[in-house]
Length: 265
Length: 265
Image (cartoon, rainbow over all chains, first blue to last red; front, side):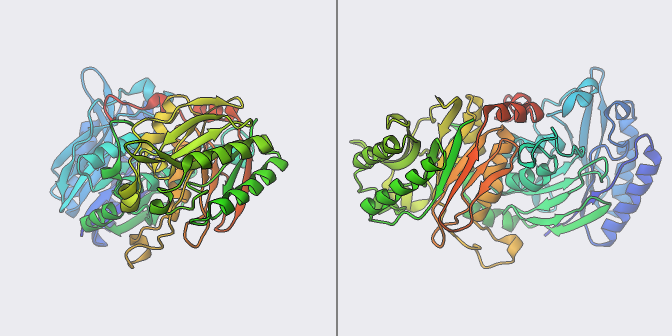
């Protein structure tokens, strides 16, 4: 039963070396407490500021992330920028405990005008791969808010989704009665647990801290319950994840078998 | 801005006349309090017992529902059995305030062995139609737990989903630690508000009462908030629903525009 950790912390914009030094310390703590996988927030090493992050040296950051994984013998999900001749992408990488980059995924749902101005969306689904006896896949932030994204991963056999995120704290949008405003905290409190329940998957969701971001990082069970839910400050969450629970949850809720794609695709 | 009511009450199995008499009383109360639409639980007139309901005279029940709608000048969503030469279906009907049956929908996701033994699933998507200035569609119970179902309705222009339901109170399944059990109350507390938020639609969800059922009927806004949430007893919920809120919610959360069906269908 793999032991999973989720980091909630603020990546400081423009302070790559400091962020990586702090990430090294978090990985040391997570490993010392027995974690075998650590998920970190979206663009933690650069800080989440799309235009600034876009200029960063993603390859160098991935090298540093690989070193951290190897140093502490922990699988690590980190997020960086990938530059091709044609475009820049927000990516997440999964490194194994020896620092090998097992997979890299390009965010396919870019969030908002700022991201869309400097990044191109990925055009491939995340790979599903084996890690510590589980089938895992990556996603990034806005991706998980789309039921189709998680359904696709679950349909391809995913037990555990590893999701770096950066959710700006929007407050109540619109200055209207509470029931008629939107608050981005609902991504953590409603959407992420609903995704886990409706697909029978674990979700690890690693966010930046308040005040700029919503916090509320979480580890959610395939029953839709919180195995860990952060507040708004710096925090490491821990939970055991077990593929037997995925099977059990899907025997109770047979959503993947009962869906009717010929009518509702 | 249409005024909507949702009835939470127990339909007694085998007591069609008594159930219809009670439904008449609820419609009178809802109309007296200003409601223009009343949504009632799945198979309320027969009680929710699939094998018993399957033998009921659905046409007679629909006639009675039409009379109630006309008597109180209120649009009414009621649920009954439809028998064709080949099969029986669980259906929901929308009657206008004059008692005309505007649309009838056959449940397309049957829940559990008991329903599947006596009913056939519908093979058509619910119609989207205009009622009191809003675009409405019907769904029944298990349907709404599938994100594809609500996405399809929202993609075809639905502002408001009207959902009779019957959610058996399962308790915590499996006699295991709370985080590793399923409780059907999560359909109301997680899945229904998530559906509303991720599509920017209102959802009216009318259930039977405890102890046999979970209660927790609700009216949810396109922001994913509860405009009304029942406890476990008999209750009428009321809320105003406004197509302008649907537009506003979809400007804040542009999920319908940002989805990527070419990658994640």
